[in-house]
Image (cartoon, rainbow, N blue to C red):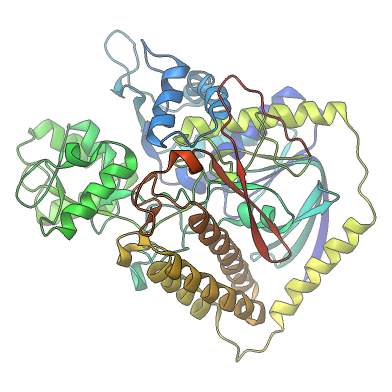
Length: 561
């Protein structure tokens, strides 16, 4: 395989929402910087915004303040958030929204020219082309080089300082070494850890992008970066079978959650994100399912609006309505997805300083990969991209660094490892076999759909043993070509994240978030012991748990090591 070395001042790994905006911000801050964005797919249609969105769910609407948004996110996560991160993020939400509009994203307005709210924190948009518009704005920066179809697999780190990364292109069959003075990781969260709603042919009919495999998390763990709150899994409540969003229906037409008897149950269990899901699970277990969003009787215009909205972002739902009767005639069935690890909805991800630097010096995190600040959504990811970029540029101006000779040796070892995967024994367990076994183990023993999201210590012990066995197997797996090599790395990344998730679930001996972390051995909340963060560092093959006290919104947090 051909090898290429690329030099950059600032390397941005991941060309999604946060990555693109980080590139734009850094390019404008210093037009002399050499900025490289490396994307696994193509930035025009990659990441969570690939198919578009019809709302911006994080915005400070008239009459509210950034503190209002912090309070909302804090309450939803039962206090386990980084208030400093949420505040600095919230202070930028409206600014980045206005910037999106200048890029060409249509934000709906009323006759007076004011934005149309979808709720106290939301705006309606026509966002089917939001990602191409963001990509276009990125490409227009003269000092930004975009490299698509390269899968970054490992960092280049020495003495807890980053010097670049290595990756591979399955398209051109090229190995890349990126040398950089600073790095922003923006690779999103992790899907595919658990058995999905629709296994088999439709396994990628899921809530989160199936190709977001948690690479950023795994790369950070391997070099000793501190992680936080992986036990706060995210499980989406979605339209049954199509896994389409429910928020557009719930907020757009005011649809309530009802059981098969027609009873509204959402107020019975609570209105937090995890409680809405928990109520649905409990109603089904009590024999009062299936559960629905009550839409029967909505008027023709609202029904047409729903058809249009879902054609933009989840066309399968509109097609299902057209086949079986629209939402005005039938309530919309709902169900929970498999668990994901995603720092844009919950607080899981890198443990970062207030300026979004990780515990690896020179490595910054933004978007779903950064922990501590849930409920980011689109605008929150943009805001974090901006914060990380500004901090990275400032650091580049203030410090100089020269990579030690060990970095080149490290890169060569990583390339050799990839070559080994291409020449492993073809009779070893296949990559797909290992992946399926991983998802089954997590589903059955680490709180998946089949277990109604609950787990016990005994189950977690079994899960950890099975994941360890599969980690050994994936190292022996054979990749017959470059595409399969990418798949091997994806499963390898997920297995490491599974190990971390299991350790975090076991460490929080309480149930603070129903379903998200439903500990059947400890079914109650324990503020005395666990009103704090569960953090971890991966060291010598083990996930070492660290507990940290909560950071308040007025604090400016900096790493002490």
